Image (cartoon, rainbow, N blue to C red; front, top):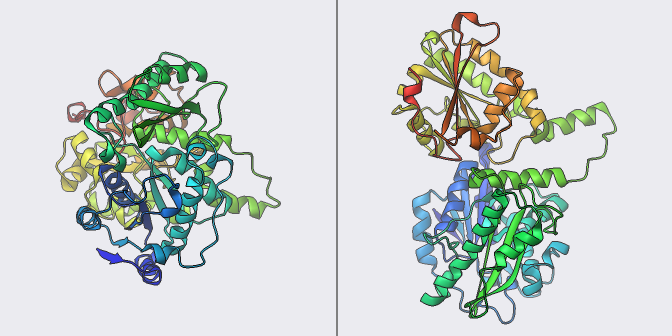
Length: 511
């Protein structure tokens, strides 16, 4: 792990890390690293080949009466934590390096920077947007990972990237919480014992909103009253705001819907804490709720202008893979990997009794399961546990893995139209294995695609989580059209291992 302090050196290292088509991820921080920051680094490692972490306490985002001088700083401790996470470089510039004498140019964040936190901390988001823009220009990442806890910050950064056509994808990682539910934050260190107890009210208030939403409450005013109800006069925590808003512009909504976010901020003495909760189905995981935010953001965008020509339409179709998944046929078609590696790993393909259909398409082809059979990550560890196997050789004896979708984004939701567009390859994948008896569907995308697009069967009106709630899995024995010799097929639906570990081992279902 390299420690870098100068901008020219960081640019040189970034060029080196991105050589040969490697993807580079950036995790911007102000140091004082905790488990929340480390979770961002772990997510970044899943999305790229190399990770850079920046550590810079940005003076521009602190107001005149805020805690810039006492903000915790311990660079050696931060570096020691990052060495265990395979971080390639840490960019820790000085104040003079980032803001030399005469610095005068800033990024204005627009209307979203003037409300909520922006109203209580004037100029804060101007400082955030400016330093993040500079980091993007210096590090030139393919993807940057931010935390859900600073939700408004992420909204502003996403808008900046869109408005200024910056070539970086913004990924969002779930909030990490202490055992009490308090969101992990560097500022928690300022709390006294009494204040730490009172700080738990923020998460309790969000839990009340979540429960009210699950019971059917959709009026934002009622949900906001639920949030404020715990903060009675005399409580050490004083609420600055408690709102339910859309996740795109952070404006009020007529009715709450999946992807809307409840945001709260409170002061405990001189310490100010923020927290939020994305609203969604009862059994949705944190990652699925983030996908609901991204889906909401997509649906809220104005329709694009009609392209001027057929060639332009095709270009946009290829570039906008989250609409049609066409780009995957150019970058990484897993069917080609599967067909090629069937010859290597399955000289007798009839030995495969179970086809696992999931969404495991890393950004870099070298990480695809059959390209790197000895690889080990969270997805594979949970997949092997789910299936009751010990490693790839055990897996390859009975199982084959294919993608439900040809879209290769791990976090970006794919439009329902892409299910039909991509479903054409699944029957072909099934035809490779004459002894197939089981289909394991990992996650709701594979579930929707297999039943709706491949079998043309209506999917249950119950949510995916409700369908699996009792056992953590669901089983359907059904005939497969045109394949009477091996009918019926046993179709087993599970949570996706990368998003949840709530499905127990299903080895007993695969006999």
